[in-house]
Amino acid sequence: MSKPFHFKAGHTPLLISMPHVGTAIPDAIAADMNPVARQKADTDWHLPLLYNMAEQLGASVLSAEYSRYVIDLNRPREDSNLYPGQDTTGLCPVDTFAKEALYRENRLPDATQVSERIRHYWQPYHTQLQAELDRIRQQHGMALLWDAHSIASVVPRFFSGRLPDFNFGTADQKSCDISLQEGLHKVVQQAAGNYSFVFNGRFKGGYITRHYGQPDRQVHAVQLEMAQCVYMDEAAPFSYRPDLACKVQPLLTELLATALGWVTEQAKKQPDARSLP
Image: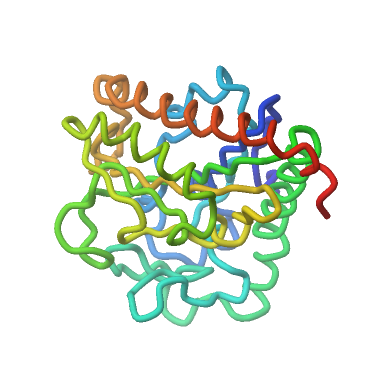
């Protein structure tokens, strides 16, 4: 079995998490799936390539190896619904965003299989995520978690019409300091003529943002869900579009640099943050 994640440590207080970029599906699981699962249409395609400025910014990067069809790393392990009353996919999804069945008849994962997937795929990712946030906070006094996502711009199952280009989630301003959100808002607003945006709209932040974003412990978290049409083809084979990506990457870089600058300045004002449990 391949390692369930890829990780590269940085030297700044920024950690970029990419829980939905994985495409691997173990043979034993794939054998129970319908052919539609092989297309992996709901992947957050090409984000490591889109975020190629991460190394320049000195960010740590954690990304998934396995597909969200195996297990969704951005869902709580008890599989509670993060958006009560709204349709969503679960910890071990049984259908695609288009409501196509992922599994052959009578081959849905049972409780034992789900527990095994938590142990083999979900827990290692989260253990590494927590460990890196702890390391960053101990070294820098404060940590910034940027949870990177993308999704097709039109998914009727989850939202009506076309999604804004940039969808920021801060758990309704609970996962980070309001001044950080205001700083990001200012940056993206200046580019509003080119890209649409919203804060805490349809996507308020998933489990990772809500669980790890703890401003009182000097860990601030932001989720960015980007509409895929701004950097790639949304139809199979889901090709990366360098002509589009090169236009949006300067804004993405500015957003990350602004967030990094914010956390660096705030850490200077919190000399005792390293002593927090």
